[in-house]
Amino acid sequence: MPKKQSWIIVTDLDASLLDRHYSYEAASEAIDYLQEKEIPIVLNSSKTIHELIALANKWNWNPKPFLVGENGACLGIPMDHQAIQFISVNHNHQGYACSYDPNAYERIISLARQLRNTENYQFKGFSDLSVSELCTLTGLSEQDAELARHRYCTEPILWNDSQEALNNFLESLSKAGIRVIRGGQFIHLMETNFDKSTGMDAILSIFKTMHPNIQWETLAIGDSENDIPMLEKADCALIIPNQSNGTIALERSDFYLARDYASTGWNTELLNILNSNP
Image 1 (tube, rainbow, N blue to C red):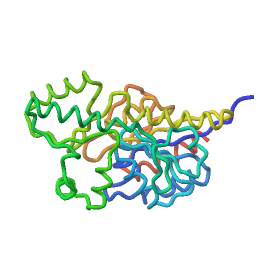
Image 2 (tube, rainbow, N blue to C red; image 1 turned 45 degrees about the vertical axis):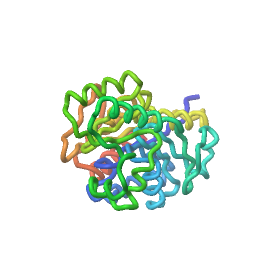
Image 3 (cartoon, rainbow, N blue to C red; image 1 turned 180 degrees about the vertical axis):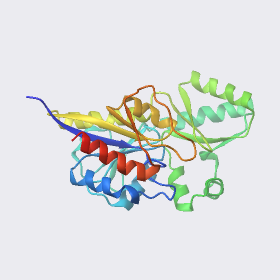
Image 4 (cartoon, rainbow, N blue to C red; image 1 turned 120 degrees about the vertical axis):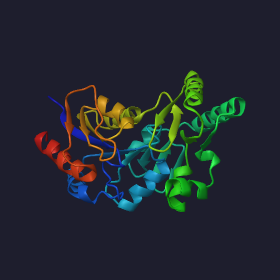
């Protein structure tokens, strides 16, 4: 007897589910549909797990979304969900059980600072910045800056040196198992064995273990380069065009491309996909 099929939606936030005002209002119809059909939603972001928990609790969805923070390196599982028995819980925070490598952040910043001291590289990381300095650089409120500084597995840095120095810095990091993800303003340092696809796979593995009689299908949604690993690996991929940076390219050809930007495109195309593939 064939297994029953069910979707898992794994989505990026900024410029994908969220518009430039950090609102998902234009995607409310699709969100309500997912909640009604009990289709799991996974928020997969470069944001910290504390930032994601604050958003999830503010939105008050029922059931709560699963969370993947810091580009795949941290998991957040609702504490009232049976899935928490399948993760190693480091701590609980505001209704979520959080899982991550407790030594990752210290390894990354220790090596980065050692290279800065020995080679005189000019950069500042989040760990070097005060809350007020981070607010000035990013435009975040003090409360949001505190959440952004609460990191477990990645370190954003602001590079103030030459391109040659950066190349040498990155080469040294790579030899130690640390890679970079380039953001708009910051360079994110993280260990090489994590990306958004590993976070997606971790959540998928949990659902497969909990419900072995179901054929789970992943639908990944994103707009940026750091979304590419999960978009390439998911069963189904939806690209959201980015109004500022254009549209990313995938190696796979069997993907969907939204016609509109951000939450508007997210809403329309997701409903089309789900209605065409119930």
